[in-house]
Image 1 (cartoon, one colour):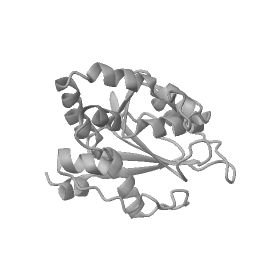
Image 2 (cartoon, helix red, strand yellow):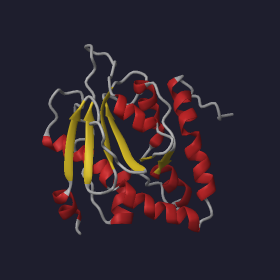
Image 3 (tube, one colour):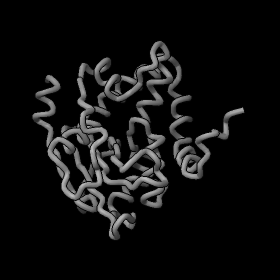
Length: 217
């Protein structure tokens, strides 16, 4: 199936405030977030998108209870993100884990990260962005046109929703490719150790230990 056909057949479900009761997304759920900026302790979380890899994307628009505040009431979403029996699959998990932990007051685990995996096995290049990986490993050309749009808007456009969905619809296929490379190169155990550290890395970033990093000289 071509990229155009896949996106045309994909179904986007938009939920406000929380996931619906009883929704199951399987043992491995692809997750991404959209925020008002790139500082998780300052910029509020606006949207969380998820997929079980079946061509369906579930987007939760988080609207704070007070103007400019956080105060999210999303017990189903928080429960899923903290569920030890559900693996959360991210691209650049360091940011998403930090913002989810800060916004929902939970520990996000266990997690996989396709960006970390790519950096461990694709040492012949410095191109580890989601767009680059999807193009090279899956033959998928993602559009990043809506990347810097206003995700705090009350009504999101169809273009924003399609962009948000595309960031999770391909992660399962991408992970299959990268996991095979990790095994081939003997770095799967090392990758898992990095994934296990992600909740702590998120807490360090939220406390301001990103620059300078505590691991620097």
